[in-house]
Image (cartoon, rainbow, N blue to C red):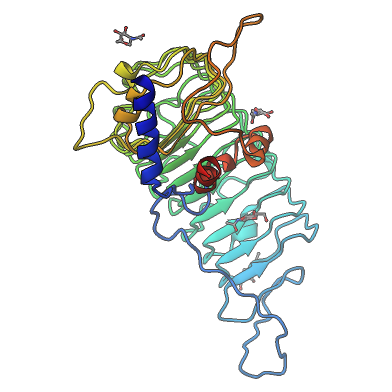
Length: 413
Ligand SMILES: *[C@@H]1O[C@H](CO)[C@@H](O)[C@H](O)[C@H]1NC(C)=O
Ligand SMILES: *[C@@H]1O[C@H](CO)[C@@H](O)[C@H](O)[C@H]1NC(C)=O
Ligand SMILES: *[C@@H]1O[C@H](CO)[C@@H](O)[C@H](O)[C@H]1NC(C)=O
Ligand SMILES: *[C@@H]1O[C@H](CO)[C@@H](O)[C@H](O)[C@H]1NC(C)=O
């Protein structure tokens, strides 16, 4: 009887073969329905005919840089071993200064550059104490600043209230001050991954009324960032040292679509903590969880590999089965836990949209003989790609782009 049920469930799953509608949440491009995020590609004209009288050249471009002819409003100064920010003509909107040796940002650097919308200072040597107070303040049109891979120890003060995207990843920022991000009411994306931040206090981020994406992966957080704005949709706090989540933590964050907090120290969490109406992706891999928790209806992808789970209690994960309002879960990864039994067949009634459960290998105490060898509906092996990404770290989250369709074909062929 048991076997018959299993077979029919598998047959059912084979029959559905729904293609994976997985959205690739790329941090920089596809993250959410943000207006004005897609900047049009800039075409640098090659083989320009310099004798063509139609092309208007302006001779205001800094000698060290390249400014394509008008109407383009771009100045390329990247990869030039520059030590200083060159003079910027007032018409320029996009400034590329990445991969140089710039240490300082002075008031005078941007004094005339009032049209600037975008500054890319990635991969330089900018130091916090060499950013003059107010250096960015007058740039009233500035929408994005990239200063990742520099030597900042704090967020530059006096950023203009027009900024929408800030990238400070890969610096040495250890502290966030309450005043740092004050007044940035248009900010939608803040990337602080790969810094040394150990806490976020309640007044730091709460006024960022349009913040949609907060990335704080690879920091030293010991607790959940406090008082996040209600607008938040993507929270990335992987690889910190967070050990618990307060009971009411997510009640003010109903817009969350994705929570990524693998590689933390979560041990016990409130059973209903993730009862969020819009949550699609939840990654809690590489923690120390011992208990299953409630799965919200909207959730599609759940990663709980490498925890201490001994069972997946369906009474907790799915207290009610509603055939008219089914759970959306399609992918579940549970390898490297301490599961003692195959996934209950009830799981497939609870989660009728399931396409793949990756059961993989489980951990056993030393000397103990593995109890279960034939988990139901598992994928034979992890693809090389998946394993590699696991090794490479998690900042990119590329292992989510697993090709579910291919795995399906392999398995059922
Ligand atoms: C700013 O513009 C003024 C007037 O065009 C010019 O004299 C000055 O050199 C410019 N300064 C910088 C730093 O570009
Ligand atoms: C800034 O430059 C870095 C390094 O070339 C690049 O990866 C990044 O996409 C650029 N950002 C923007 C917004 O142009
Ligand atoms: C599952 O959880 C429920 C509610 O907490 C509990 O009553 C039940 O004993 C658990 N079942 C198993 C098999 O652990
Ligand atoms: C976690 O972050 C630390 C730096 O804080 C880094 O050295 C380590 O490689 C990261 N681990 C993973 C799995 O990404």
